[in-house]
Amino acid sequence: MTDAVRMSLEEVHAAAKAAMLGQGFAENHASAIANTVTAAERDECRHHGLFRLPFYVNGLRSGQASPDIEPVLTELSPSVIKVDAGYAFSPLALETGDAPLAERAKEFGIAALAVTNALNVAALWPEVERLAVRGLVGFAFVSSSPYVAPAGGMKPLFGTNPMAFAWPRLDNPPMVFDQASSASARGEIQLRLRDGETLPDGWAIDNEGRPTNDPQQALLGAQLPFGGFKGSNIALMVELLAGPLLGDKISFEQAAHDKANTGAPCGGELVIAIDPAKFVAGGDRAAQLRHAETLFSRLLAQDGARLPSGRRYEARRRTTAEGVMVPRSLVASIEAYAAGRQVTERATYEGDHITAGAASA
Image (cartoon, rainbow, N blue to C red; front, side, top):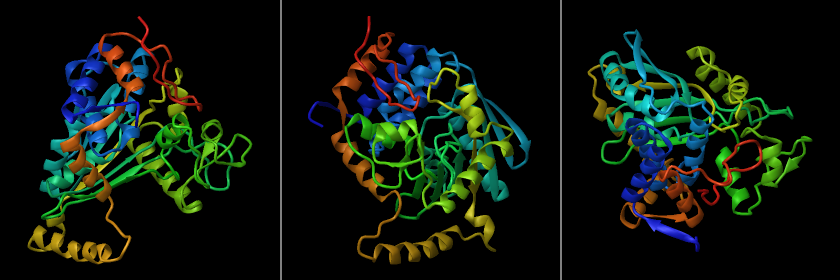
């Protein structure tokens, strides 16, 4: 980026937290949001980094997101806990349920966390990576606003419906993947629109159902699932796991709730934690993880193959030392948010694009 500012990760966190505090979020919510935004910038997942701050602001200013409600944790059964986010953004609710979920997984072998009534615009990998750092296997599933047409269909029905998985390793950071069931994340299309880039084939159709490489037409039409019916089936599974299973909303119901078009869907997230040691006689977790390494080593021995999360860890090493580059226009918007001001061009997620313009007085 030529028109950009280099920021250390500490500066990114401070700026994100100040922006959220300036807009009215309570200290604990602002800190949790800053944590997930900074993690995304650190790993060069920019469409979930500072780019997302306008979504948090819009959710708050629209009145759809609580800035200060405390998450409420309840035990539904010995190995199933629930955190009701109370119509606030998800980062604090997920942090609230993190340690209790891990403790139950280590006691019972497997445990689940149901996060409900949470506005979610963040990546999923942070919550499963935290579990894997503790030696646990982690899964996460969340639905979103309906942007994806089912295989063979022409109209949006499913969310991008990401899922994440993490596997612990002995002498390396966890193996983690976080991927949408759509061919691309929504933010990737928005970034390509912002940067004047076209889309690969197979990502989207326009509002007439025709394949398109134009990000503007894609946002007005529908995204496509990856792998045709296979990806579509996975999207359907995620809808059920994050919606009816938890007593929360299906993607099209989330869209009906988002009357202000904030782009911050409100629904459920399912997180599952498994302790490998409880699944073998003798509980030798180290032996299980060493066994897994034989698979990883054979995969990495093939030219061109890489483990999921490898790119993120390379970025993490680099950005920890060098910081990240942030567009000046986005820095100006963040500074305006921190000062308690609005932005001239309100960020929207209405099928067109997201913008963060110059600050207004």
